[in-house]
Image 1 (tube, one colour):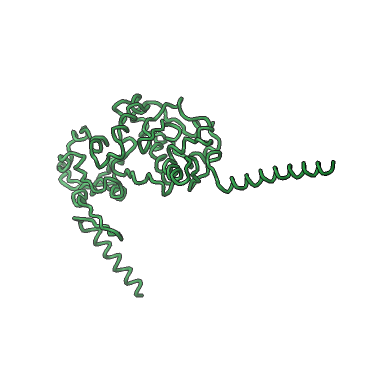
Image 2 (cartoon, helix red, strand yellow):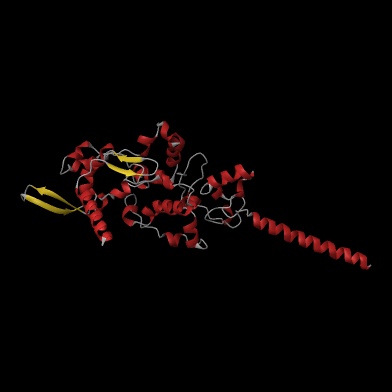
Length: 323
Protein backbone atom coordinates (compact mmCIF):
# COMPACT_ATOMS: atom_id res chain seq x y z
CA UNK A 1 0.00 0.00 0.00
CA UNK A 2 2.85 2.38 0.90
CA UNK A 3 4.54 1.51 -2.40
CA UNK A 4 1.38 2.31 -4.38
CA UNK A 5 1.00 5.68 -2.62
CA UNK A 6 4.67 6.53 -3.24
CA UNK A 7 4.36 5.57 -6.88
CA UNK A 8 1.28 7.75 -7.18
CA UNK A 9 3.07 10.76 -5.70
CA UNK A 10 6.01 10.26 -8.07
CA UNK A 11 3.66 10.06 -11.05
CA UNK A 12 1.91 13.25 -9.92
CA UNK A 13 5.20 15.14 -9.55
CA UNK A 14 6.40 13.94 -12.96
CA UNK A 15 3.08 15.01 -14.47
CA UNK A 16 3.38 18.50 -12.98
CA UNK A 17 6.94 18.84 -14.27
CA UNK A 18 5.82 17.84 -17.77
CA UNK A 19 3.08 20.50 -17.76
CA UNK A 20 4.92 23.52 -16.30
CA UNK A 21 7.21 25.35 -18.79
CA UNK A 22 10.80 24.82 -17.73
CA UNK A 23 13.18 27.77 -17.39
CA UNK A 24 16.28 25.68 -16.74
CA UNK A 25 16.64 21.92 -16.91
CA UNK A 26 19.23 20.53 -14.52
CA UNK A 27 20.66 17.00 -14.79
CA UNK A 28 22.44 15.90 -11.64
CA UNK A 29 25.39 13.53 -11.80
CA UNK A 30 27.89 12.26 -9.27
CA UNK A 31 30.57 14.67 -10.47
CA UNK A 32 28.73 17.81 -11.55
CA UNK A 33 25.41 19.31 -12.62
CA UNK A 34 24.57 20.23 -16.19
CA UNK A 35 22.38 23.25 -16.85
CA UNK A 36 20.50 23.55 -20.15
CA UNK A 37 20.87 27.30 -20.45
CA UNK A 38 18.49 27.78 -23.35
CA UNK A 39 15.86 25.24 -22.30
CA UNK A 40 13.07 27.80 -21.94
CA UNK A 41 13.88 29.49 -25.24
CA UNK A 42 14.17 26.18 -27.10
CA UNK A 43 10.97 24.96 -25.47
CA UNK A 44 9.08 27.48 -27.59
CA UNK A 45 10.40 25.71 -30.70
CA UNK A 46 9.90 22.19 -29.39
CA UNK A 47 6.26 22.92 -28.60
CA UNK A 48 5.68 22.52 -32.33
CA UNK A 49 8.81 20.91 -33.75
CA UNK A 50 8.96 18.26 -31.05
CA UNK A 51 5.61 16.74 -32.09
CA UNK A 52 3.90 15.32 -35.16
CA UNK A 53 1.07 17.85 -34.81
CA UNK A 54 0.85 21.49 -33.74
CA UNK A 55 -1.76 24.18 -33.07
CA UNK A 56 -2.07 27.65 -34.56
CA UNK A 57 -4.68 30.37 -34.78
CA UNK A 58 -6.18 30.56 -38.27
CA UNK A 59 -7.20 34.17 -38.85
CA UNK A 60 -9.34 33.27 -41.85
CA UNK A 61 -11.38 30.76 -39.86
CA UNK A 62 -11.23 32.77 -36.67
CA UNK A 63 -10.35 29.78 -34.53
CA UNK A 64 -7.51 27.58 -33.29
CA UNK A 65 -6.60 24.78 -35.70
CA UNK A 66 -4.61 21.56 -35.27
CA UNK A 67 -2.34 20.63 -38.17
CA UNK A 68 0.25 17.98 -39.04
CA UNK A 69 3.93 18.89 -38.78
CA UNK A 70 6.15 18.18 -41.77
CA UNK A 71 7.94 14.98 -40.64
CA UNK A 72 11.29 16.38 -41.84
CA UNK A 73 10.90 19.28 -39.40
CA UNK A 74 10.18 17.13 -36.32
CA UNK A 75 13.12 17.20 -33.87
CA UNK A 76 13.44 14.71 -31.02
CA UNK A 77 14.25 16.88 -28.01
CA UNK A 78 15.78 13.91 -26.15
CA UNK A 79 18.23 13.34 -29.02
CA UNK A 80 18.97 17.05 -29.19
CA UNK A 81 19.82 17.37 -25.49
CA UNK A 82 21.98 14.26 -25.81
CA UNK A 83 23.91 15.68 -28.78
CA UNK A 84 27.06 17.78 -28.87
CA UNK A 85 24.95 20.89 -29.47
CA UNK A 86 22.85 20.33 -26.36
CA UNK A 87 23.62 23.76 -24.86
CA UNK A 88 22.93 25.79 -28.00
CA UNK A 89 19.91 27.95 -28.64
CA UNK A 90 17.93 27.08 -31.76
CA UNK A 91 18.45 30.72 -32.76
CA UNK A 92 22.23 30.29 -32.71
CA UNK A 93 21.85 28.68 -36.13
CA UNK A 94 18.37 29.74 -37.23
CA UNK A 95 17.19 33.29 -37.93
CA UNK A 96 15.77 35.39 -35.10
CA UNK A 97 12.79 35.96 -37.39
CA UNK A 98 11.61 32.48 -36.39
CA UNK A 99 10.42 34.02 -33.14
CA UNK A 100 7.38 35.21 -35.08
CA UNK A 101 4.66 32.64 -35.72
CA UNK A 102 3.43 31.69 -38.25
CA UNK A 103 6.90 31.74 -39.79
CA UNK A 104 7.52 33.59 -43.01
CA UNK A 105 7.88 31.21 -45.97
CA UNK A 106 11.02 33.08 -47.06
CA UNK A 107 12.87 31.82 -43.98
CA UNK A 108 13.08 28.37 -45.56
CA UNK A 109 15.49 29.87 -48.08
CA UNK A 110 17.99 31.03 -45.44
CA UNK A 111 21.53 29.71 -45.66
CA UNK A 112 22.42 27.83 -42.50
CA UNK A 113 25.96 27.67 -41.06
CA UNK A 114 27.90 24.46 -41.54
CA UNK A 115 30.38 22.68 -39.29
CA UNK A 116 33.39 24.65 -40.52
CA UNK A 117 31.78 28.04 -39.88
CA UNK A 118 31.92 27.38 -36.13
CA UNK A 119 34.67 24.82 -35.64
CA UNK A 120 37.43 26.10 -37.93
CA UNK A 121 39.74 28.66 -36.37
CA UNK A 122 38.63 27.81 -32.83
CA UNK A 123 41.50 26.64 -30.62
CA UNK A 124 39.07 24.51 -28.61
CA UNK A 125 38.63 22.27 -31.66
CA UNK A 126 42.17 22.40 -33.01
CA UNK A 127 42.74 18.75 -32.14
CA UNK A 128 40.16 17.71 -34.74
CA UNK A 129 42.04 19.45 -37.60
CA UNK A 130 38.92 20.97 -39.20
CA UNK A 131 40.89 22.60 -42.02
CA UNK A 132 42.38 19.23 -42.94
CA UNK A 133 38.93 17.63 -42.83
CA UNK A 134 37.65 20.27 -45.26
CA UNK A 135 40.63 19.68 -47.53
CA UNK A 136 39.95 15.93 -47.56
CA UNK A 137 36.23 16.44 -48.12
CA UNK A 138 36.85 18.69 -51.14
CA UNK A 139 38.69 15.77 -52.79
CA UNK A 140 35.91 13.28 -52.00
CA UNK A 141 33.35 11.87 -54.41
CA UNK A 142 30.64 13.52 -52.33
CA UNK A 143 32.11 16.93 -53.06
CA UNK A 144 33.17 16.83 -56.72
CA UNK A 145 30.07 14.93 -57.84
CA UNK A 146 27.49 16.93 -55.91
CA UNK A 147 29.25 20.27 -55.41
CA UNK A 148 27.37 22.63 -53.07
CA UNK A 149 24.36 20.32 -52.81
CA UNK A 150 26.29 18.07 -50.43
CA UNK A 151 26.77 19.74 -47.05
CA UNK A 152 28.10 18.68 -43.67
CA UNK A 153 24.51 18.21 -42.51
CA UNK A 154 23.98 15.39 -45.01
CA UNK A 155 25.99 13.17 -42.68
CA UNK A 156 26.15 15.10 -39.41
CA UNK A 157 22.65 16.03 -38.27
CA UNK A 158 23.20 19.06 -35.99
CA UNK A 159 20.16 18.10 -33.90
CA UNK A 160 21.46 14.67 -32.91
CA UNK A 161 25.16 14.36 -33.82
CA UNK A 162 27.42 13.01 -31.06
CA UNK A 163 31.14 12.93 -31.69
CA UNK A 164 31.61 11.30 -28.26
CA UNK A 165 30.14 8.13 -29.81
CA UNK A 166 33.49 7.71 -31.56
CA UNK A 167 35.37 6.15 -28.66
CA UNK A 168 37.14 2.88 -28.22
CA UNK A 169 35.14 1.88 -25.16
CA UNK A 170 32.77 -0.12 -27.34
CA UNK A 171 33.86 -0.67 -30.93
CA UNK A 172 30.55 -2.31 -31.91
CA UNK A 173 28.60 0.81 -30.97
CA UNK A 174 31.00 2.98 -32.97
CA UNK A 175 30.57 0.74 -36.02
CA UNK A 176 26.76 0.84 -35.80
CA UNK A 177 26.70 4.61 -35.25
CA UNK A 178 29.04 5.40 -38.15
CA UNK A 179 27.42 2.96 -40.57
CA UNK A 180 24.00 4.40 -39.81
CA UNK A 181 25.31 7.77 -41.01
CA UNK A 182 26.10 6.24 -44.42
CA UNK A 183 22.87 4.25 -44.56
CA UNK A 184 20.81 7.33 -43.69
CA UNK A 185 21.33 8.25 -47.37
CA UNK A 186 22.28 5.02 -49.12
CA UNK A 187 19.32 3.15 -47.63
CA UNK A 188 16.81 6.03 -47.72
CA UNK A 189 15.47 6.79 -51.21
CA UNK A 190 13.91 10.11 -50.11
CA UNK A 191 17.16 11.53 -48.78
CA UNK A 192 19.31 9.90 -51.48
CA UNK A 193 17.41 11.61 -54.27
CA UNK A 194 17.88 15.06 -52.75
CA UNK A 195 21.24 15.14 -54.53
CA UNK A 196 20.76 12.72 -57.45
CA UNK A 197 18.11 11.45 -59.83
CA UNK A 198 19.65 7.99 -59.91
CA UNK A 199 17.74 5.04 -58.53
CA UNK A 200 18.74 4.05 -55.04
CA UNK A 201 21.61 1.52 -55.07
CA UNK A 202 20.94 -1.78 -53.39
CA UNK A 203 23.73 -2.06 -50.82
CA UNK A 204 23.33 -5.84 -50.48
CA UNK A 205 23.48 -6.42 -54.23
CA UNK A 206 26.49 -4.13 -54.75
CA UNK A 207 28.34 -6.07 -52.03
CA UNK A 208 27.43 -9.57 -53.23
CA UNK A 209 31.10 -10.29 -53.91
CA UNK A 210 31.91 -9.82 -50.20
CA UNK A 211 32.17 -13.16 -48.33
CA UNK A 212 30.34 -13.36 -44.98
CA UNK A 213 28.59 -10.13 -45.91
CA UNK A 214 26.50 -9.76 -42.73
CA UNK A 215 29.56 -10.35 -40.52
CA UNK A 216 31.55 -7.69 -42.37
CA UNK A 217 28.73 -5.14 -42.10
CA UNK A 218 28.53 -5.75 -38.35
CA UNK A 219 32.30 -5.72 -37.77
CA UNK A 220 33.69 -2.84 -39.85
CA UNK A 221 32.56 0.63 -40.91
CA UNK A 222 31.74 1.56 -44.50
CA UNK A 223 34.51 4.16 -44.42
CA UNK A 224 37.14 1.47 -43.79
CA UNK A 225 36.82 0.37 -47.43
CA UNK A 226 35.43 3.51 -49.03
CA UNK A 227 37.75 6.27 -47.82
CA UNK A 228 41.41 7.15 -48.07
CA UNK A 229 43.04 6.69 -44.66
CA UNK A 230 44.53 9.83 -43.14
CA UNK A 231 46.54 9.61 -39.92
CA UNK A 232 46.16 13.29 -38.99
CA UNK A 233 42.37 13.37 -38.64
CA UNK A 234 40.05 11.40 -36.40
CA UNK A 235 37.76 10.12 -39.16
CA UNK A 236 38.61 9.97 -42.88
CA UNK A 237 36.45 12.26 -45.07
CA UNK A 238 37.92 11.59 -48.50
CA UNK A 239 35.26 9.18 -49.75
CA UNK A 240 36.52 7.35 -52.84
CA UNK A 241 34.51 6.36 -55.94
CA UNK A 242 33.31 2.77 -55.89
CA UNK A 243 36.00 1.74 -58.40
CA UNK A 244 38.66 2.52 -55.78
CA UNK A 245 36.96 0.75 -52.87
CA UNK A 246 39.01 -1.89 -51.05
CA UNK A 247 38.18 -5.31 -52.49
CA UNK A 248 41.28 -7.36 -51.60
CA UNK A 249 41.00 -9.47 -48.47
CA UNK A 250 44.71 -9.04 -47.74
CA UNK A 251 44.20 -5.29 -47.21
CA UNK A 252 42.63 -6.10 -43.83
CA UNK A 253 43.48 -9.73 -43.17
CA UNK A 254 47.24 -9.35 -42.94
CA UNK A 255 49.94 -8.28 -40.54
CA UNK A 256 49.75 -4.72 -41.91
CA UNK A 257 45.96 -4.52 -41.75
CA UNK A 258 44.60 -1.11 -42.75
CA UNK A 259 42.11 -1.45 -39.87
CA UNK A 260 45.01 -0.79 -37.51
CA UNK A 261 45.33 2.68 -39.05
CA UNK A 262 41.62 3.45 -38.91
CA UNK A 263 39.04 1.60 -36.82
CA UNK A 264 41.52 0.17 -34.30
CA UNK A 265 44.06 2.97 -34.55
CA UNK A 266 43.98 3.92 -30.88
CA UNK A 267 44.22 0.39 -29.54
CA UNK A 268 47.08 -0.34 -31.90
CA UNK A 269 48.97 2.77 -30.81
CA UNK A 270 48.44 1.90 -27.16
CA UNK A 271 49.67 -1.64 -27.70
CA UNK A 272 52.65 -0.34 -29.63
CA UNK A 273 53.67 1.93 -26.77
CA UNK A 274 53.46 -1.03 -24.37
CA UNK A 275 54.83 -3.90 -26.44
CA UNK A 276 56.98 -2.18 -29.05
CA UNK A 277 55.33 -3.44 -32.22
CA UNK A 278 52.32 -1.99 -34.00
CA UNK A 279 50.20 -5.01 -34.82
CA UNK A 280 50.20 -6.55 -31.35
CA UNK A 281 46.64 -5.47 -30.55
CA UNK A 282 44.32 -8.19 -29.36
CA UNK A 283 41.11 -6.35 -30.12
CA UNK A 284 38.36 -6.06 -27.53
CA UNK A 285 35.36 -6.96 -29.71
CA UNK A 286 36.78 -8.48 -32.87
CA UNK A 287 39.43 -10.93 -33.98
CA UNK A 288 40.73 -10.26 -37.47
CA UNK A 289 42.06 -13.41 -39.08
CA UNK A 290 45.60 -12.83 -40.26
CA UNK A 291 45.89 -9.47 -38.51
CA UNK A 292 45.94 -10.21 -34.79
CA UNK A 293 48.89 -11.62 -32.90
CA UNK A 294 47.65 -13.75 -30.04
CA UNK A 295 50.32 -14.49 -27.45
CA UNK A 296 48.71 -17.83 -26.48
CA UNK A 297 48.63 -19.05 -30.08
CA UNK A 298 52.24 -17.92 -30.42
CA UNK A 299 53.25 -20.03 -27.38
CA UNK A 300 51.31 -23.07 -28.60
CA UNK A 301 52.89 -22.73 -32.05
CA UNK A 302 56.38 -22.54 -30.55
CA UNK A 303 55.73 -25.59 -28.34
CA UNK A 304 54.44 -27.62 -31.31
CA UNK A 305 57.38 -26.50 -33.43
CA UNK A 306 59.76 -27.48 -30.64
CA UNK A 307 58.12 -30.91 -30.30
CA UNK A 308 58.47 -31.52 -34.04
CA UNK A 309 62.15 -30.54 -34.01
CA UNK A 310 62.70 -32.61 -30.87
CA UNK A 311 60.99 -35.62 -32.43
CA UNK A 312 63.14 -35.38 -35.52
CA UNK A 313 66.25 -35.05 -33.38
CA UNK A 314 65.36 -38.11 -31.22
CA UNK A 315 64.56 -40.14 -34.32
CA UNK A 316 67.90 -39.22 -35.90
CA UNK A 317 69.76 -40.02 -32.65
CA UNK A 318 68.12 -43.47 -32.40
CA UNK A 319 68.96 -44.25 -36.02
CA UNK A 320 72.60 -43.37 -35.35
CA UNK A 321 72.71 -45.61 -32.26
CA UNK A 322 71.14 -48.49 -34.18
CA UNK A 323 73.78 -48.33 -36.89
